[in-house]
Amino acid sequence: MSLCKTKLTISDLIGTISSGCKTDELIGLEYERLPVDKKTNETVSYYGSRGVCSVLKQFARVDNWDYIEDNGQIIGLKKLHDTVTLEPGSQVELSVEPQKTVADLKNKVDTINKTLLSVFDKYGIKLLNYGIYPVSTYKGIKLIPKKRYDYMTNYLWGILSDVMMRETAGIQVGIDFKSEEDAIRKFNLANKISPFVTAMCANSSVRGGVNTGYKSFRALSWLYTDNERCGLATKLKDNMTFEDYVRTLLKVPVIFIRRDNKYIFVDGKVNFAQFMQSGYEGYEATIEDFSLHSNLFFPDIRLRNFIEIRNHDCMREDYMYSLLAFYKGIFYNPDTLSQTEELLHKITYNDISEFRYNIPRTGLKTVVKSQVAGDITKELFNIAQQSLRTQGDSDEDFIYPLMDLNKLGLTPADKETV
Image (cartoon, rainbow, N blue to C red; front, top):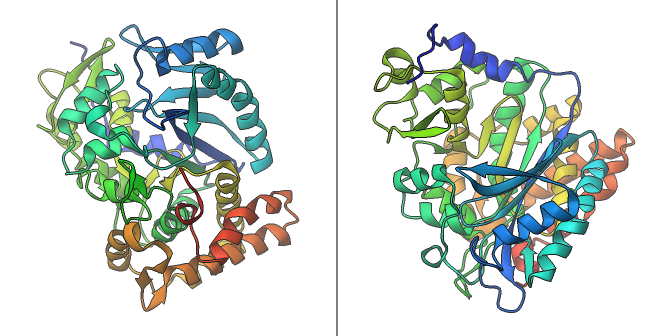
């Protein structure tokens, strides 16, 4: 057992967030896709000679990537600041180094995809830009051999937690902040926008080979996964601080910790505040424990050393780049921040909480505060597009595919066929 010499303090934890304050404003992207058989659309397993692990090994050899391993099992690849990792049901996640422009992000994704997709294709596999496996369901999807996923499966409660873990794929966007005040302002606004963006990105209607009647079954699965660590992270107070967010995390039960590359299953017996105060079975809390604990907290909007916006279904790439341009237009222009805050100023925490539960089924037609969600998303897109245009930003060109679809009152789920 390893014991730290000095007890962890609240200030230490706050520092993990405040270290993110920076002058540059970059955009981050994590992009999950679904490996399916090209002929049947059935999920491709991690295992076997045609499994995802075999494909990753081949890709690593062809394009000179390094292995990421867990107890000797390959769970991903890394190359400088970029990674290709696997989610519990073999979903393939591409995470690229944050960039100044959407164009630069696209260039990085295109460069990696050129070889990655070619290797998958040789194995008869396509990476599907969709929010949920369209044919296979979780009972027929084996977990990849990553120990943390075993613990998460055994711990996470909620009737759709297995669906969320094994079946779904999403897009996460990272937004920078310059100060604590800037971070809280953007964090609160991102939470207010989040259900509207869930609606406009809805792309997971078909599951188990049938249309479920939901625009986003992926969003539904998150609503019914462990409410102690999912959903909305805070009450969205204007005077919120980094410390308030940290204290929210302190109340969340601990699933597991790691020591000497081994997992210790805590199983929620203590929350992080109790762990800091009294330890657990002789182990004292470390800053690495808090970092792991923070990564096992899954709100729609997560505050780290950047703001992580997590509530988007995977969709085809031109829509994904539209989403990135949308966020750039909204969050990286002070005047536009104020415009967006004014548009949504009447929407409360309680409104958002209720709104989130209706969005998966009715999408852009959902009503909030006597307004149809689709009308508000059109205004949000106009604000973002005008922001990019006013600043002479060449990334404006990217915003139109999803914006034009939204003008028609449609989402990717209405447009795309699996």
